[in-house]
Image 1 (cartoon, helix red, strand yellow):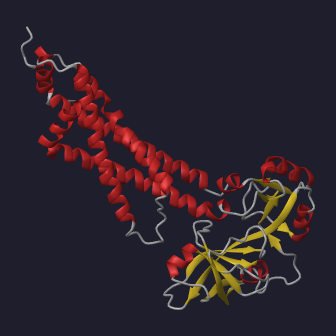
Image 2 (tube, one colour):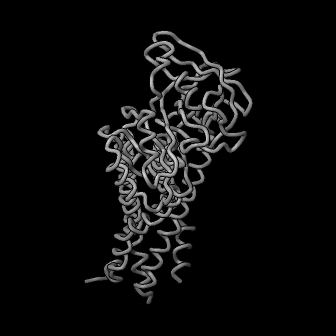
Length: 385
């Protein structure tokens, strides 16, 4: 009975209910786009560190976990490897440059990541092969570079770098393509460590050939990954020059990451709050417009339970239609976005957003349900004395 009443009214007044569903669809699109933007920007900052093949990440002490200011020399790496419980240590260096390729109209800005071939820090190649030599002029590009440029395994690219005050160009061959490895909101090119040290931007042309190789962070694999907390404390106790943390702590310390995510989360919560108020307002108006009908139903013996359940089912149905329209429209529109736009509709984030939106409708409509239960038949029909 309740379901029949709910669907019958929706069909008889489909114009107004379609309007409500479209408003819910627009709110759904807003929430999903904010969620996608939060995921895209977050992934752009954390993707490389999040996927790092390491149990701990070591920084130079007193640098507040900032990779750009952390400096770890070869001697410090040797000391880190000697700590009991440490299995492997891979130096990782970060810098920025741009790349050119056949058919390029303009350079693509990338993060240059220097790694030790075969050591923690080198991402696995999903196509092609991994790096083979510390000095080879070869690179692994991440999926984002491949999507934006069309570069394939075996293609040649040119890294444009500032050496001193001059622009220098270095030919590099692509030997592999990895998954997404963005760092600092830029797609990544992963180079052997010696090659990276040669081509990265430097204040003096050619650098200092006698200088010690310096990394920004060290990727640490442990004999027992489950003991990472104890090992982090041991590393800092036995090697005071280091500060070791897990990957989550590392990427959350990336400059601007936490503030960015809090800002976008606030926008998402406000969008949901607006959704509750708007949906609640719509259904309250619809309930006021049908007070006489509700009174008639109660006058002929329909119980409050049936009336209330009909209202709830009606709200759920209209909300579900609106959320479905909004989700389909958002995902369809997302297919047209260029790959440079940092919006990622991750299945987990989208699912959470859709479930939350499906709950928003009934929550917003609770006031109208309560009002429909309080309608007195005689008063609604104008027969009360």
